[in-house]
Amino acid sequence: MQPILIEWGALIIPAWHTFFALGAISAYFFLIFLSKKHLSQLLERDLNRLFIYSYLGGYFGARLFSIYVDQGVYTPLEVLKELASLGPMTFYGGMMGAFFSGLVYSMRRKLPIADLADVSFLSGMLGLFFGRIGCFLNGDDYGIPIFENPIPWWAVTFPNHTDQIPRVPVQLIEAAAAGIIVLGLSLSFVKLRKNLFPGMVALGVVSSYSVIRFFLEYLRGDPRGWLIEPILSPSQGISVLVLTVAVFFFAFSLKKQH
Image (tube, rainbow, N blue to C red; front, side, top):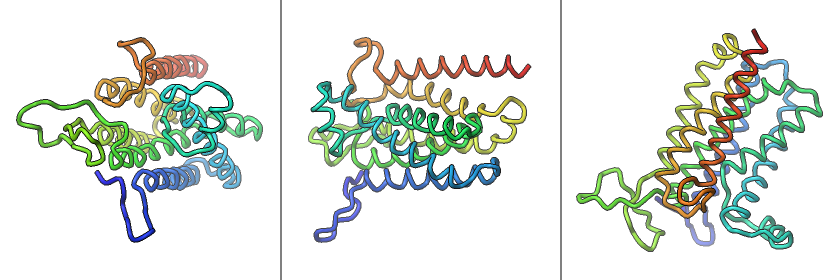
């Protein structure tokens, strides 16, 4: 846990911003790699533009979701002020913003949406892997307190927290889950698309992450508000919705194929 990676005189390199940048860069290069390996018909120019649109949509989506849900800001002028400044972001907001931005661009360019979804969703999950490590180093999105005695070896205490309470390292758990999703679906990329249909990799990403995220919410200790207090958090509600849509598309695509 180290919010500042490097501090040398006036030079300060914060951990979260560094890993956010690493996540974006790794997602871009992984997108290009997967596309060249599996979708060679796509032009790199289109992939570059797709990434830019998705990145911008993801950033503003992540900020807007956090502004509305976490910060409780609703008036248009205040929302614009918050958007113009750096602040907290949420993954689900970023995912939805990136998805719809990429979808609009793909439809306008008449690109194969299912193929692009497969490579894009995997790339986004790799970005999340680095992002959650940054959250861990910065002490954001922290886990629930641990009051066991003796304290388990895996418990963490964040130096920038005033309470100094040992907590569940939920950020690292989510990072590990994202890494496993990327590894598993990358290795089965061709097989899933061949035996089922294009777009199955993307459905595998969103369905597996939504299930994991739903249960990880029970280990989160930071205030996130409630969708149904005290039963369902906003992220759990979105997880249920995403999983439902993924199952619907899976059944529809399978029926259409047969």
